Amino acid sequence: MSMFGMLDTAASGMRTHRVWLNAVSDNIANISTYRPMDEAAYQPRYVDAQSLPGANGQYNGANGGVGVRQILFGDPEGRVIYSPDHPLADENGLVRAPDTDLGEQMTQLMMAQRSYQSNSTVILRAKDMYQQAMQIGRG
Image 1 (cartoon, rainbow, N blue to C red):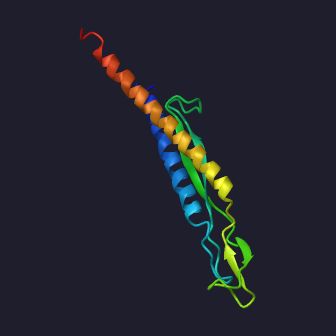
Image 2 (tube, one colour; image 1 turned 180 degrees about the horizontal axis):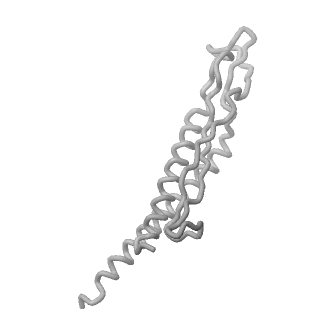
Image 3 (cartoon, rainbow, N blue to C red; image 1 turned 180 degrees about the vertical axis):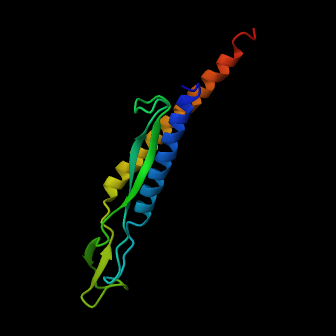
């Protein structure tokens, strides 16, 4: 096991959570993106993460980590909204909107942000620990 294994594990978490933060940010930014009925609605993105095997090939956390397995997309049908004054409305006054819940996205944003911060803190603490270890014997 590498001496810097915890750094590798925390860095993998930061990379994965950055992808998650970007996906949630896009979903929130496009929550009011309306499209004509003959087009697909904005499809919210969801990150599917997975554990990565450690140095010994096991999923026990020893130099393992986490990675993005795939990006999943929401329903292209979205929600149909009656808005006859909207410039993209069809002859029946209907437009497509993404099937995205702002409350759920804000919760996802907070979880991803906290997880990113936790991994960042691990890296900072490990850096401090390694610096102090290098000072041993320099007395």
